[in-house]
Length: 181
Image: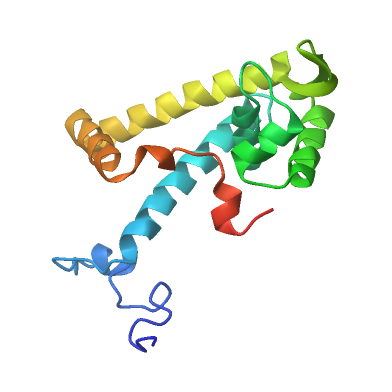
């Protein structure tokens, strides 16, 4: 049963959102739904700022899904089926994503030296450049958070998240639980 007082909790005013905090009305304990929203907003902020910076550095066609896919390809390359498994999507969806990465110049298809029947997806120098740049941008954004919050608080936040996030949760298959392909 849905509690009518908790319906539309995100958009209703007076529910402990940012405007309440700005008025100094922070509640001593926030409702449970706020934690995943804050974590997601932090994630989204980091990703959006990373892609804005990547666009300024010559990767304006790169989208967040492409970064996940390039991570799934990895340094050694992978088959489209492996990319699909790593992303938690169908082989067809992975193939479309790989096709897009190839079209944009971030990846290429090559023969697998270990199996002539199989094609590997490999990152191109352009793809490797994008990943290297995104790593540097993430480091710069972390440094900004450190300046804003202090190094001890950022390290504590990371440590606390490691303590509550199971190791197997470090997966690339965001599409699966976000309802995507």
